[in-house]
Image (cartoon, rainbow, N blue to C red; front, side, top):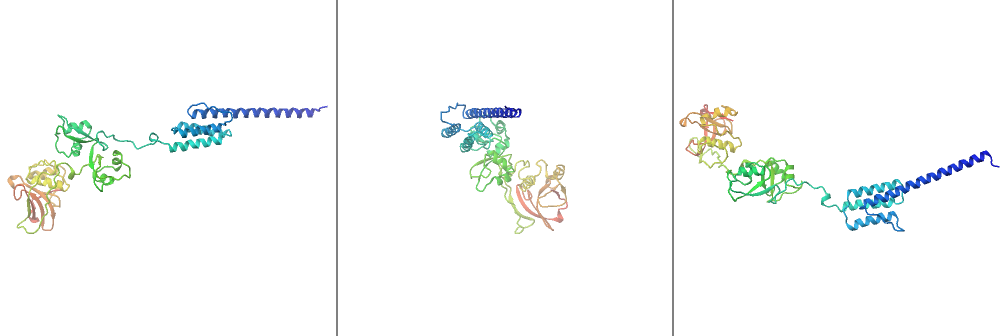
Length: 384
């Protein structure tokens, strides 16, 4: 006869068995669901083709076969494919499926394939800042002048200044000859032909341009050596005075403090116009003083009138005017020469003499180098 205690024990055992069977059912359902999800994602990640399992094939074999097929066909591996493959592998590992190891290897193979098969559309390259049109040089084009064109109108057509266009074509004229071919930079600045020994840094320093702008605008590698003969555009570059169109180097005026009589140490005839903007009459003292100051990098105004007016004009323009001589200063005084006054440039000073250069002291269009006793210069003004 079964006791009450034994009946309770039997009921507890049956309940445990039932719960165990239920847990196994849930586990089987989860694994089955994960398995079919793996199959679905794997199918989608390899082009949306349906997998057709053969009787003795495993999921691992199918995955390996797909990886081999992609490799042999040299297909491009997209980011979406890699993401899907990685997701499938992680899911299989979380569910402890036997196929997890094979999927992990297949996914790794895809990553390797992606690295080896990159093409130009998948690589980030330096952007092309300017696309050249009719020139092999970046940012430069050629333009054939049409009837009615001027340098101003052509420059406006390309959105640059007339000065940039003139610099690029070594021209000082506003006129443009019909039929001529002009070099046109596509931005304001300097068109430069590279010479032996030039570097990006040296050009940036000389023409006052940021090195990075030169590199980017001309599509250069940061460590690329410049080759003589290549043309570059130096955006917003400043052309030095000595390289600008129409420049003529001045004849040197070097005082020779012996071998000449009187206070004239040397003399020579004047030279052709050198610096733009000089509105004084050629051959006069004012013309020479303007030229000499421009040559030493200390330009003065071009509308100061006769030499007798220069002290007042310079003072009004903000220049320092006093009675103290100094190298590079303009010396000036009124009266004389029909009331026009006289001007020149101080070259040096010592305890006894003022050494100057001037024009029209010994004759029209004649440059002289003179020494003047300081004791006789009390009426001079000096423009610094």
